[in-house]
Length: 377
Image 1 (cartoon, rainbow, N blue to C red):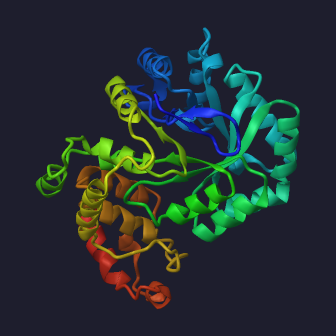
Image 2 (spheres, rainbow, N blue to C red; image 1 turned 135 degrees about the vertical axis):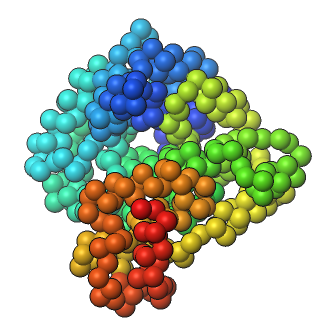
Image 3 (cartoon, helix red, strand yellow; image 1 turned 90 degrees about the horizontal axis):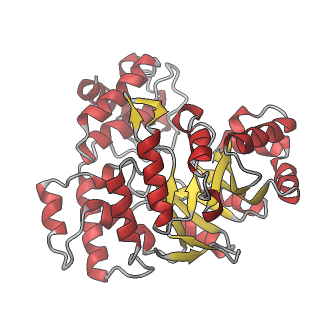
């Protein structure tokens, strides 16, 4: 296993972290973790050098933390750094911070959490952090020995990310990054901004929810075949992330033992700057092909919302694009079905034109909504 320095700490952390939100389950029920398979996977990863385990309060319908607590018994807790997250959206008053942390310590059967993140920060949850003074809570939790290091995970725009980085003495930041999302949310610029301030960088969604691990179509396969070294699509995507010197580790939400073994093997030699310029160019070519399949050139800036009819315009376009970019028609239609059940579907459009008047890209949103609904409904 490859190890990397974790920001301003003296810790050496495995380049691969185990994300505990996609364990194998029974009967398709995410709350019913297949404990035998998942425990075997977790133990195999730790026995082969993975020393960062990442879970969270809501994962597997709140069953991930209790499972991880059980699975780390028998000496495994002492072999790893354990990360979990404060569900800030559940907090209405300051004391909720302490109640939730104590609940998580009990579920995880541990006296302390190594890496504690404020979960899924965005404009709304960040406002709550400031109003309830999460900073004092984190300081106290560290002083009391309940947590060792404080960080945050992020899902919003770059400017907010920079504000959050500068607002507190964080140890680390967790962001989404993969070769398709260089400019998405915090992106490359945010990663460099935080790393320049000595924050460790933890990467989530390196495979974009598995989309970059799919069997490639003929056009993309021809590009991968040009490489001197034959690799699987997931291997290429992981290596692209690990190639960046700012990255401390990436998280993989592994669902099978084969995925665990493959990712551990990739981590052995996916060093910083280990990709050749030719290999980086091949990845760029693949990215260009995927982007060429975009149906709507929407940047998800959000200027079109709120829609008077409560239509989820950016989410609809994102789903519509993903169907063609990653060849996932069934998954995309299922996603749109959930939007329909939530009464946020495109057929509600009354063609008022408010969205088009606000769109900085001057997109014909009304027509695109009709096209998306026709394809996804």
